[in-house]
Length: 222
Image (cartoon, helix red, strand yellow):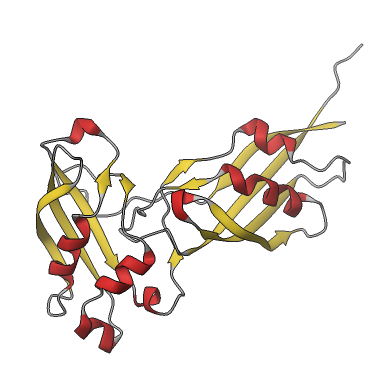
């Protein structure tokens, strides 16, 4: 009996921001890192260990950098998050030249975790993911009767969206060989530099859930 992969799951991608905004949500080829956000963190908010969110609308220049940004919302509004977000947006670069001259929606999240080295990626935008063939190549070589396995990897996002220092944080059920297989897949993932929640990814930790759901394939009748 052989096994066939029927469901693959890795880090659900969630949308951010209210649907009421008419501007498209940009994705970025370049964006500030965790250390950049920490350096730009407003002093008063840093002292109070307060987090905040800003929703910007910006025009995309010919150099693909956002410009003339204005804050649609700033929460809370008394800690300087708006000006800090506008300066950070100038360092971003969209990945789509068709957006030149258009206004785009740019979410920016200030999480106090960037100040302590505890930043986590919660809503990644994936730049690359493994193929079904990549997953199949990491199946255990021996059949063990298990057809539903969940693995969670813990990794760090490096420059270029590469996942490094990955380790198996969870394997259910354990000891089936899928943890090792998932580790072999880690090099196939690439994370975009800016999360869908407006948070930086480079320099942050990420938990990567992978779901293997397999079903027996009956041999053809001779």
